[in-house]
Every structure is written in C-alpha cells, then in structure tokens.
Length: 287
Image (cartoon, rainbow, N blue to C red; front, side, top):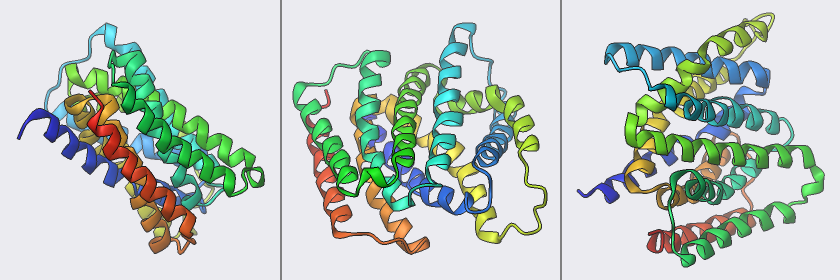
C-alpha cells in the first residue's frame, strides 16, 4: 500500500471516530458544565498520553517545536472542545454536525499557510462548493434562532482547522500520536486544576450515559482519533485528506438520530450527499 492511500485510510478511521464527538458532547453537557467537560476530557486524555510517552521512552520535543505544540493544544485540546460544548447548549447535535462541513476548507487554508501545500484551483472550487452548501443549510435553518450557538460553532471550526494543520506539519517530524500526546501533556497541569475547580458539587446524580460520553470524548475524540488523523494528514497531505471531514456530517447525523432521537430532515441528508460528492472532486485535484 502506498503512502497516499495509507493516509486516506488513516484519515477515514479518524473521521469515523470523530463523528461520535458532537453527539457524545451533547449528551455530556446535559449534566456536566461545559468548562468542566473540556478540562476533564483533556486531563484524562493527557494522563493517558503521558503514560504512552513514558512507556515508549519518547524524546522530548525540541524547543523550536513548543510554539507549534501550544497552537495544537489551544486549537484541538482546549478551543474546539470548549467552543463546541458551549455551542451545544444552544443548538442540537444534528445542527452543529453540519458545521463540520466547513472544517475541510479551514484545514486546507491553514495547510497552505502553515504547511506550504499548493492544491490546484479545481480543488478550491470543490472545497468552497462543499463549504458553501453547509453554510447555506445553516442559514436556511434560521440562523437568527441561535446566533450564539452558530457563532460558537464557526469559531470552533477556525481554531480546529489551525490545530489540525499545525499538528499535521509537526507529525511529519514527531509522529502522529506523539504530537497529540505532547500537546495534551503541555496543557495537563492547567486542565487538572481547572477540572477540580469546576467539578460538580456532587457526582452521585450523574447518569450512566453522561459518564460514557465523557469517557468517549476523553479517550477516542481527544486521543485515539488523533493518532489516525494526524498520521493520515501527514501521509496524504493536509488539504487532500482534510476533505474527508466532509464525510463526518453523514456519520454524525446517523449517530444523532440513533442515540439522541434528534430529527434528521431531508435537507440535512441532501446537504450531506452533496458534500460527499464534493470530497471526491476535491481529492482528484488536491495535488
């Protein structure tokens, strides 16, 4: 199997794992404060990442890599989880998932800025078309009904795209799981303190689904998913493999409908199918 195909396979596995993030977050914020949820998931994943780094005796990153690791930490460890958790207090998981369709464009833009990639003009046409379809859907749903939720989701997409591109660039030198592990360890002291400060007064009334959701976003969304995702981006190209995020709404909507019994409208399905077609077009012209 060549490096490019391996990158697409790893990227797809990462997307499938990430698809459960927003539905799981939606369940968790019903009983956990968003700030506590963000800190707790980062602390749990950070502890696991530290164990992995120690077990494999990984060398510390060079001093020149610390700034990039900080960007990754602020983007995907803190920024995206916190902003989406806050947003999901205002919008449904099904509605927020569609915003993920904007993530490939954000990742591609930062891939050009930070990763030095240069996709063909046709790539941008497909990427912009897919993102425009997502934006049009959000507007058609009545964005004025929850401007705060939608603004938070848009901000989450921007910081996440930057974190993806920066992490993928570092993965070429440090390795995929090492990058997310070091980013988690970098933020671990602050996240542990924040988790204790925002912990609920009592945990006895927290139901099982909330605990399962916390475990999922901590281990899978925050750590395991990135092992595959950063490896895929580094192998297949940030802009190219990043387009796989256009498939995430399809998986996410199915989970939202199955687990949360949220309505999935024909418009949602139509947008999802359209962006899936866009990812194939973008892939053809990514290099």
